[in-house]
Image 1 (cartoon, rainbow, N blue to C red):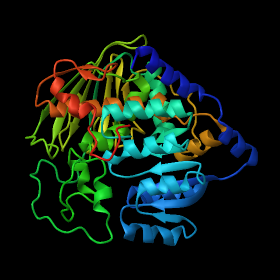
Image 2 (cartoon, rainbow, N blue to C red):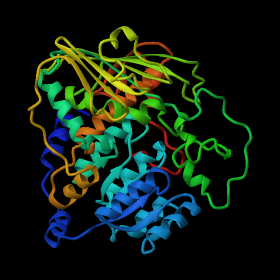
Image 3 (tube, one colour):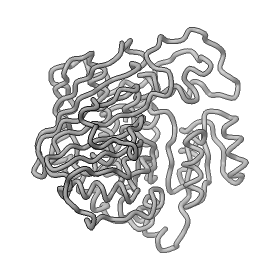
Length: 435
């Protein structure tokens, strides 16, 4: 895609592309948004609850019949499905919006198909499993003129937004270095593929769960319902799981799009399961608003060296298992925890009165966007897509086995490693069309 096309996506997102007929009708009626919720177990349970708070859940879908039955007790008027394709087809004329809270490998195709039906779409982080899918979801959102939002809820937090604007305004001076660490994985990684295969439970549609991924046998507890995160075919590892949260504030503050290189040091990587730990260095070129930046990501209980943390960590501000550190030429800011909110500034200048836009709440932003046409902050083309692309680029470094990846974001190419193409643009299993 050309640079002009990418700029158009961002501009279109910022303007909202005007209200659609459906948005105008809904706003005029003051009506409640009708949701189809795809994936209603685990995080899907709370996403469905959000949809019910701000609208009406008229359809629920999950590959596990037991999960559907449990959800039906909460939403007895919703129509139940176990196949997302049947759900979208049957409910095409009855819903305004769709939530997608399923394993990463199915985000792209479900969200794309929902938007192509003209449905406003909420999709959990990291938006999708590959960079190509993230780019396409942003494009489709613009093409279909629908409202979108990724599930990185911290984006709506006032403390995060204020800190981001303070950093952008120069609170710690010119930022040249960022360190971000996570306590993930909290699931098995760096392991061999299990061999204790079994017949899937009769209540689980295993083939639909596999979806676009290559066929593999069912193994109890290995993939469904939680541990899929540690497998390349299904998840996006620790960076994909938490990057869109813990990197969120630095991304918002410093427009950390499009790294020019990525290089990782990792535990042994068998190419099937993500390594048990990784340390990944991103390099970002200077922009018109900031200088070049080095960003280092740590996971698997790896953390930055203590010599750069000593002046921000003490008895009152303990080093937590997840957090971020931004280093400027006038000071530092240490933000403990996963969600980039509530940091400690050492040095710097007082910018306590910096302005920022308050949020009515993350999911409330999406519903407002649907009714009024003003895009949510974490919309696909203007924010979530570029953030997801940056986060997923880190996994190219993990895949590269210690080599530096020279990255051309505009062309979505690792210019020195064409063998990474398969991890940038996926191949879907037969029967599924690439988005």
